[in-house]
Structure formats: C-alpha cells, structure tokens
Length: 145
Image (cartoon, rainbow, N blue to C red; front, side, top):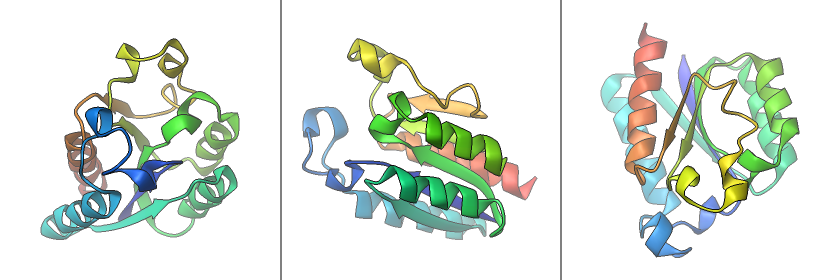
C-alpha cells in the first residue's frame, strides 16, 4: 500500500508566500523529504498538489481503487469551504489526516471551521512543516499495521 500526500490551493507558493506564517521551505523540498521518509520506512509516498477543487476530488476518489492505504492532506483554503472534498472523502473511505502548517485556531475566525476534521483520523496544526512528517509517521504506522 502507498500513502498519498495532497496539497491544496496556493501551497505551490510555499517558500515565498507569507514566510512569517509558512516558512521558507518550498513544496518541492517538503515533497522530497516526505518521499525519502517513506522510502526509509519501506512505503511508497506519492505527492499531489492542485489549485483546483475538482482535481483534488478526482484524486481522492481514485485513491479508493489504486492501492492508496492512507492520505495526508493539507487542503489549504478548501478546508473552510469545500463540502465537495468532504463528500469525496466520505465516498472514498480512505483514512486520512488533515494537516496544516499554521495554527488555524489562532488565526482569522473563518479559518477555525473545517469541513473535513470530523471525518479525519486526526488533525495536525501549528507545527510548521514538521507537521507533515508527524502525519506521515502516523500514516506509515497505520499502513504497516
């Protein structure tokens, strides 16, 4: 089984977008680190990023049948707006962890509502890019059983 890491809108701008909130590490660097972490554990890690809600939905639904055992997702702003992504997770029935670089609960009021959290196995917020590693460690443990 493999693990899929999904990043939502604007996360392709990591490294330059609001570095005081998101840091200076690029998404390519995060992806490379996660793939190396998976390889060291003997688990394949696939990464996917899109600014388009439908592409994210299509990828979640495809995960149901392609050998994906677990998903780590940073849905970005779709966290607070996308019932459609929530419905895709409900339909796919692939377990997932919701991951956010910043502490969304210490930010603007609209960021405190997630349409995904109650379906997630867990939620990681506020640990910077280390949150991805923590989420992947958890996912690896789950797929290795």
